[in-house]
Image 1: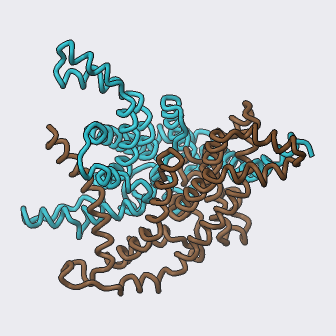
Image 2 (image 1 turned 90 degrees about the vertical axis):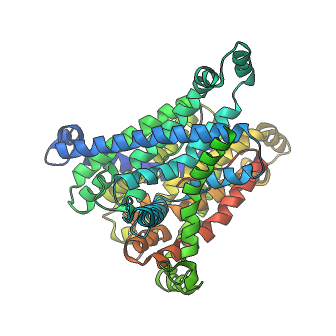
Image 3 (image 1 turned 90 degrees about the horizontal axis):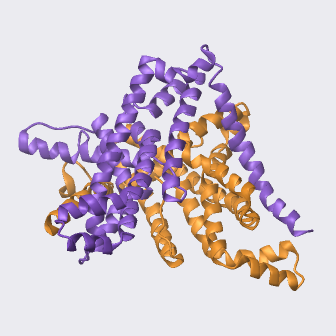
Length: 271
Length: 261
């Protein structure tokens, strides 16, 4: 057998499995999106139907807020951790990146423990103010959940970006008389923009597509993945669910493609 | 300035770690309301075993089956894609990486629409296996391709060929052993991802084919906190050794490991 033939044989199982269990089903999904009563217009329904539009806006705002907050937190902590050396630093870094592998459901449970009916925060506010603050089963809780699984991811990328910063640029700025805040604003943060875009894109795409966390926290949270789920399982509105899924998939893919072109590596969504 | 940043970072770390520690503790506490003063007990863990042992076994079953499939499909494919290195190979790589960008919900829906009609297949755990393989394959392929890029595949291949070995013998006896670190890293990743997979699995499962994350979601909704915590503790015990192993192997290969939530 020639080498070329052998190489083709090596690729054959992959081709068969990918076509049978991914390409064909996705094609079927796209086709199903237009089989509903409104036909191909179902794809526009996400923008035209008020209920769907509200959910879309909710989801986008939540994802954007998560991304912004995570970037801010990760920058402060990332700069600090990468630049300073102190005893216990590696343990602190391990603690911050340990939740990287938690499935969305477990993150939801973490939030319930923090902010649910028997949660820590409720306990604390009860002792201080006599009233239990329960955040978990609302958008605030979902926001906390999204923060929970975004921070580990983004912090790693930001720290890697900080590591690659050229110290000579900062020294040059300082020698020209720039104060610490000016050095941050004009030298450090602009140099970190690629890391911000790459990790921000991942965080945004993950938050848009996250299902497990929202599912655990409550079934009446109004985000796109939950909408797709309820359309499919409760309303049996398969065509609409398919159209919405395709829309969500396109948005997530576009965001990740953006992140990839900036960072040059392959990235994955989760949640 | 240092103190302020340290305090902030500690606060963030606490936000992440405290609930995890709390859940591990709650899983072995007799009564969460009364706290640790009510004593430690393994009763909740035993109850979890009685209720959910089948999900634990099934998760392991599916994880190892997924591993077997990704090894059989992914390792040769990584070799093929690496050796070809042309635009077609790059396109194929893009396509198999797509499942990472598309939400699990959408992929599950697609599988249900296409294969939901095949009753026996739909009802068996191999339906879930298919979803897991589609999702974890790119990780195995990428991991093996990365290590192939580090060893001199061309020289090894050509020297073996010059000694008269057939392509298959060269692959089996020269390439694969040299790619072992990448195969190992990929394997740990695949098993970890499969054990924790929820978004796909929730849509694809039936009451008879539940996995551990599906059971977790169940318990969070319907069981008392101690049982849910004990179940989460079992999950942590399963997953943390894998994560630590991935970190160690990753450091040895010169690359930090990351996993997916």
